[in-house]
Length: 413
Image 1 (cartoon, helix red, strand yellow):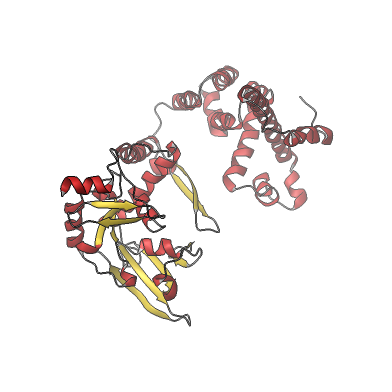
Image 2 (cartoon, helix red, strand yellow):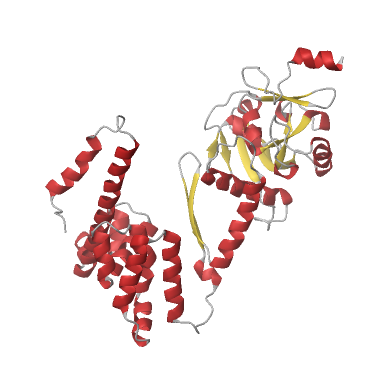
């Protein structure tokens, strides 16, 4: 075991002063490998120390009932992170081969957490009743964690746990599901969830269907961004369908509270409009939300008095939407092939500025391009029914083959 004194800690932290901008790929990867090994070793030592604190009742010194609460209060851990660390410490105590592999830096904290249920009291009792050689299981799972990809480790652990109680009752899937989220100061949301096998399959099938249906040429989004966009689109489709359960006697929808002068202005001031669940968004984003769908618009006057309170207003009625969908077919932004059911009906001249809710003043835009249009881009429908798209600088976005406007007019003249 390496030294854990202050000198060793300072030596480990000294690497942060090393310059990285002059290093090449192989050198960087070698450095990263060493750091990951050190991270694994440090995580194992932290878990081992937490377990010893637990056995010694150390949390009581600071007036805490358990190491979970100590970690949440003193180390600012989330509840899930504190639970994982405590559980990892207990598992490493019960599984010495795994503990040795972790201490050597060969196994990550995530792998330890995956194996940890094997050492849960109930599973240890079941293994003892069946005469399972826990030392052999410890060796096998440590080897899998060291040498195989993480999905294979999960399968190996699940297979072992299933074999402990092959004839037991089928678990209630709701016991295996959880969803938690945290809202940040800018209104953005972080969330974490757990699903049973069937629920996870349904979730993946729904998300993947939207991901695969939206793969435009030149898409530079990462896989994670594509999946997040698909989740937002799934929620948007459900809200638009109007089939969700009522929320305090009304259908779930977006609530936007915005001062009148910000609603009718053309700026993009941040932190202007308030949403129903507490987030604050820009004026441009609020105008974008008010283009289509069911919204409760609360317009606030200069003295703070509500000018338009609690008025649920469907900006685009179903009949008009169907007509616009039939005409446009999908997103009209140049080069986009998003289908109509992914699109909002955008007012070319915003209704807050006097624009009519009519087919002549409407166009279909997907979420991404609807956002772009509310941030400087512009779409325009020609007399012949064709759409043209312009950048914030006024230049037109042309698709291949790019025919100059003068030549196109000469050919059609």
